[in-house]
Length: 313
Image (cartoon, rainbow, N blue to C red; front, top):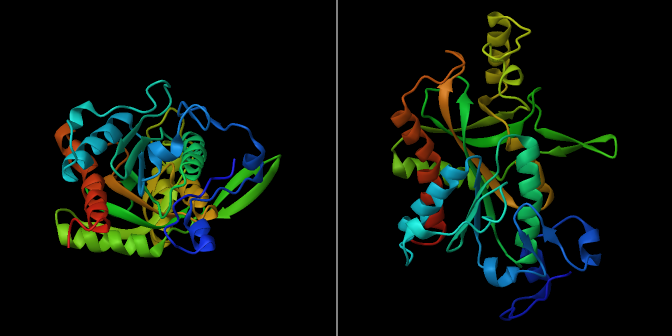
């Protein structure tokens, strides 16, 4: 159903419409109800504008535990009332994703890989649309393998690229391959880089992020159950990636960037490098070091959110 527009506060009607989160599917207007199956939410069973209408930031990441920790961290940083340890998983009725609402911030898990985050993104964008949200920024927080970077370096993505270092995402639809651009919002990326300079807690760079469909062979690892290439083949490919501006590798950024771009959503990808792939394939840092690394994108994104909300000058 089309959103009911209330309390436009004198703003121009067309401008209000443009600011709303848009979907690119006319079929949704003809549906009596839209069930967001993997979230356990629906347009008839829940009052989505009341529940989510104030959302300004949707932060997504692979791990359910990490996104719960991020929600608790944001709760403390925004100094919201209540006990952050008692925040409720809105998706607790499902076993696919977790979702926490902390003031104007959503924290959602998306699992691993393009198919998992793609399902979540379809339902998240529809949720924001049905809730009549406006001016929302989407941010993916994650871990990655660095390309020519020291472990612990945070990469703010310039362009999400595929295995051939092209800024595009290929999707098979009705047996045909369609291609979508994966360029991300330059302004948001630069804001995040500025925030990192204010924190000065860890090195942060802007670079291209390569998205693959596999953790092992697809990323040129030599330690999987299968390996069809040599050590030198791997290094040659990584050198080509580095020369193409790639600074880290993960498995979700292209579809995330493509879907945000099609729907006109400002978005950014912020991932920490857990290792330098030129030096090896297996993560050897201690548990405590990895925990601290994984908190770095959270700290940076939290600073960005607080600045956007006017809590930091």
